[in-house]
Image 1 (cartoon, rainbow, N blue to C red):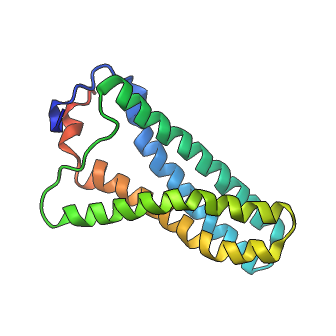
Image 2: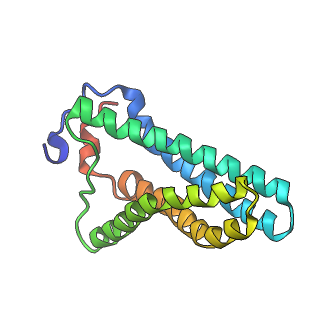
Length: 166
């Protein structure tokens, strides 16, 4: 099943709303991470905690929607993803962004956990040491998540999207 030959007719229509939902959640997470960083730099600890807990919850919502999307595509259409079909110089750019995004997203999850646990235990020295690495990775993953969505669904729409019922 390649390109527009994939049959999406059995996929519930709400599933096709999930990519834009995921991009929105990634954008919200980006704003919360930056706000949380600004708050801690200004000594606003409670605001920092609020931003970071909310960013964590938004990321959990993202992961739930992301997994639901790919599972539903696989179950109903026999493919777990929409492929990037644009040719030319943009293709390696897209895949460079996608590959680094996916790799760092996998690395990011344990980093976030390793950052949160010391904060809960009030080991702020350890929390700060790990957060110095986790925050830029989390930001990169959130920002590139939006970019991947824009490239695949908006700027260079996959030819597979033509087969999606409207």
